[in-house]
Image (tube, rainbow, N blue to C red; front, top):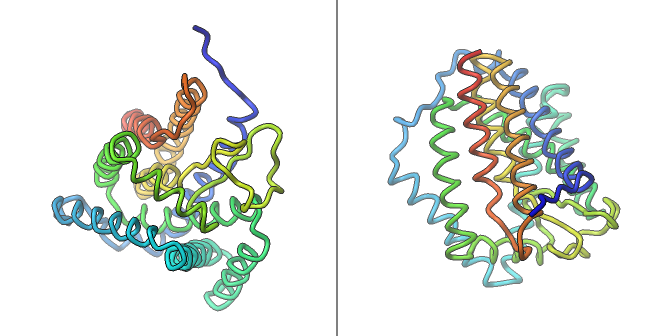
Length: 277
């Protein structure tokens, strides 16, 4: 059986993913002078059981909110607006003073909701994920991020293939037009499409924000150690993205898949390679 590889479709997911990694690493590098004296957070600073309990509580909370469509819709929109504001303000702070970055971030959130098309969705997500990923990543130890990658990879597998609750949560967010991730149009569709017309499997693919931010956390955490190591991990995460794309494209029956495991696996391989550089 031959392996199908749709280059144009892969390029469409590679561009926002790659831009986010590049911008996130650059932001972490620019934040470095401000955080160099702060001690990175290690896994020992967390309680594993406490971490897992918090994750379960958050998932249950989101699922409960999703059941009440009207309230859930407003909650998802408010939460997404908060994330966009926070992430873009962090990125803009590299070039603008704090007051200007606040006003521009508010403007970006406004434009995001006014136009509601794929290009505004993905542009806002690039800034959001890069900003949040850089701020969080540079405050963590690389091994802490690796533990997180492994845990969430198993969680992704269980939530997609076993319980299915991640699929239900994603559907609720799509229905509310508050999508926490990239919308990838396949051939025959463009970035000018309205978010209201987006139906996964109907010419569009959704790449969740977690699939993008987790490898960035590892890259950003390495900026303190070596910029070359951070870039190496980012390049390997792109190989993971390619692996994910091949698995998704070559499914016998097309269905949602856990995208994080292959991306996380290759990111960790990149970390191991970088340790020998």
